[in-house]
Image (cartoon, rainbow, N blue to C red; front, side, top):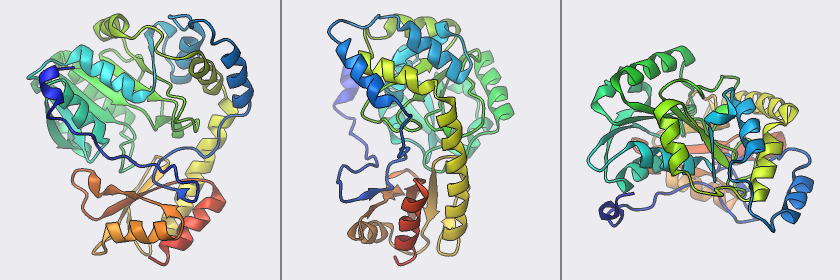
Length: 336
């Protein structure tokens, strides 16, 4: 991180509400968690009187099986955003150019600026048209947040090859890829993958994730990673959760079915962006997004005001939750 850059960088808005009286559709978190999580956490807490093993062998094996790479290619981090920051710290220098998609996760731009580098914005669906040789790093969000569309896997790999040939690192944020059937690009040469356990496993407060990389990028991440980056409960619960194949399959099917149902129901009132993720982006037309968010909140439902994303002036984003909760959302949005 560049000390000279920190003072000029602001924090960015995010979804999520901790108000127990609100049904939260502003954050894209699975309302369910894998079975056995509480028991695993309690057991891990009793082991927290000593430091965890710094090489996290069980966690790395579980993560490798989860995304299809080798355990040696996994770098444990306290959440996906920590993997993103670590990647930038090890690949980007002050004055560098970093290609950042928009509209997309606001932390990309912020983290680039914290390094003293310059974010070069490009529409998220035109990233593959760019020349990676002009940048120190290219960032891709797959599926993209807040639009929800996933990249074609073959095109992504072809672009990754172009990045590698240009000597440019490619960072692929797969925070929501676990909700899809698409294979991870983890282990692909020249690519750093950032993964979060927050969304799919419904554990945002646990702060567990990892990076996956190869070659020089992996060597730098391994050298720079924090000692004991994960507490014992986070590492143990994360290891358990990534092995819950039945839970993952059930979640994917439920989200896919509910997303289709919600999109069909909302299409009469909004222009709904196609999505492969556990959320939908709604174009509200000439209506005021802020007023829609306020009106929904008055009825006990929290929506994400998507106008805080670059390039979106008339949009809100809604999560895909459980069927009965989605019914409530549809009722509220039918009246606003």
